[in-house]
Length: 422
Image (cartoon, rainbow, N blue to C red):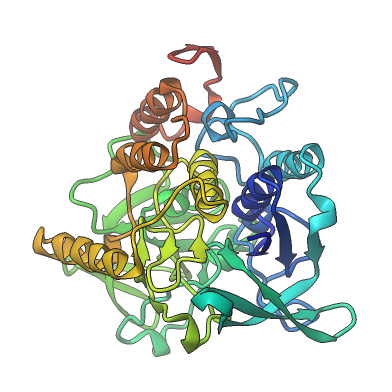
C-alpha cells in the first residue's frame, strides 16, 4: 500500500502526512483554505468565503491557548525556545504548524485551496477497499477524482456549530451569534451579553467580553458554580430556557435582560463528503462505527484522526497517526471487520448502560491517558513522557481555580517526569 489521501491540512492532517511519509508512503493532503493550520489559521471572515466554501476556523482575534506549549507540542517537534510565554497567541501555534511542515518537508504533498467534495468506497482487486476522492480546485474551478489505497480524515470538528432553538427566540430583538463567528469583543461594547455555555470557549469569551461589556451573564447548568475569581461585571446564572423580546428566562425561573446572546454551545461532527458507500453514520455528536475511535470498522482502510474531545490534542494526534501508519504499512494487524464492528457496538452499549449521555461517547478528558496507553501498546510505539500528563492535569486544576491569572504562569520541562514553574 502506498497512496494515501489525507483530508485536512491542520494539525492532525500534517501529523498524519509526516508519519506516512516517514514510513515510505505517498500522502496527498487537501486543504480548502489558502494555507495550512486548520482551525489555527485565523480568518477575519465568517460565513462562507469567496468560493462559497464555509469558513472552517473558529479562531478569534485575541485567543491564547488554554494549555501551555510544553504539553501542546508534537513529541518529535518542540515549540521554539524563543517563545517567552507558555500560553501562546494562536498565531504562534499556526507558525509552529508551518515550521512543522517545513521541517518534515511536507509542502510538496499538500494542495491548498482544494476542497474535497465526495468520497466513494471502491472495491479493489483481492477484495481490498480503496477510495475514490473527488476534489475541486478552488482557484481553477476544475473537479477531478483520484483513487487511493487508504484515506485518513483529518478535517476537525470545530466548524459546524450547534445552535439550540430556545422557545420564543424568533421574537428576541437582540443580536444572536455563535462563538464560531465571534472574532472581536468591540461590537459588544457597553452591551449586556448573555453567554450560553461554560465550556472552555464560553468561559474564555465571556471573560474577554467583560473587558468591554456593561454586563456579562455566563449562563450554564454546571453542577456547581465555577470556583474562580471572575471579572466584577461577569455573573454566573442558570442556563437559559426561553427567550423573550428583550432577554431570557433562566432554569431557576428568573429573567435577565440582554442586548445580545452568544451561543458557546459547541459543535457537531460533520463530514459532508462521505457518501453512503463509506458505511459511516454521523449524527451530531456521534461517529459510528469506529474501532478505537479511529478506524472505519467496516472498511479499515479509512481512518479518522482527532475525533476524541477534551484532550491534549497534538500528542494524541501523533499517537493516532503512528497507529494508523503502522496498520497501513502492515506492522500492526487489526482484528477482522466483524470483530471491530462488534467491539464498537459493545463499547457504545456499555457507555449507555453506565448512564452516560450519548453525546459524551467521544469525550475523554481524564480517560485520555489510558486510551493513549492502549494505542501505543497496540501500535508498538512509545507513550508520551509522564510529565505531559502531570503538567496537563496540574494546569487544568490551576485553570479551574484561577481563571483570571493562570495564563501568567510559565513552565519549563526539566526531564521526562519533571517541570519547573516561573
